[in-house]
Image 1 (tube, rainbow, N blue to C red):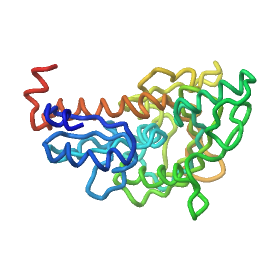
Image 2 (tube, rainbow, N blue to C red):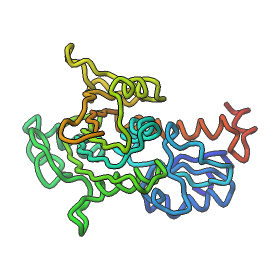
Image 3 (cartoon, rainbow, N blue to C red):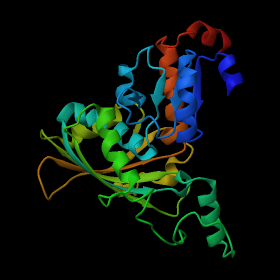
Length: 286
């Protein structure tokens, strides 16, 4: 790490866990190196910005030396919510997630495959079998009965969208799928919306693909989003149980837009807007 600092890169992308980031990110930043961190260490720090480029990259400045990359499930949701919030103002979001085992890491994938292959003594990352099962449990349980993952979605959504008035409640669920997270999202707006206009807003939103033709059985699925950088949105329909409320289904590859791609897009924004201290060096090397 000391050698990396001595090399004086313009940017360092961290994905080595919170403890490593807490120790080393300030040292890189002190050397004038911009850190983009993929752990949860800095996400809710009051002096650090939490960035999804399609939503709030405009708040970044050259003085931001430690930039937090959000939680994967939050990223894909806010990409789809942002254009609707700008038009109708969101009051409340109810989200249930269906998250891939890849979000837990390689050992979770190994557990799923070992169970599927009926292997004995395979790895055990989860407290229960994951194959042919669903676990309403992601990350640790907190005193309020929610999990840490669920509260990440609550708090990070407000911070990224810059609006503490948005009410969010979340249930996060692990399913035996590899390569993508899915979300059922119910959104209540302050202002009335037109469903045709909603489709147009999403179709024109950066990073969003509207895939929504139920007559042809076309709707977002993890298998469709796998290996892609875009956020897929479908099953758009009114909530007929209350006014000014929309139901939507959001899917994205959690290892791409939910993690690596978002970090790279932050880097690209900083470079394109000349927000690195040594942008000239980066340009020459590129």
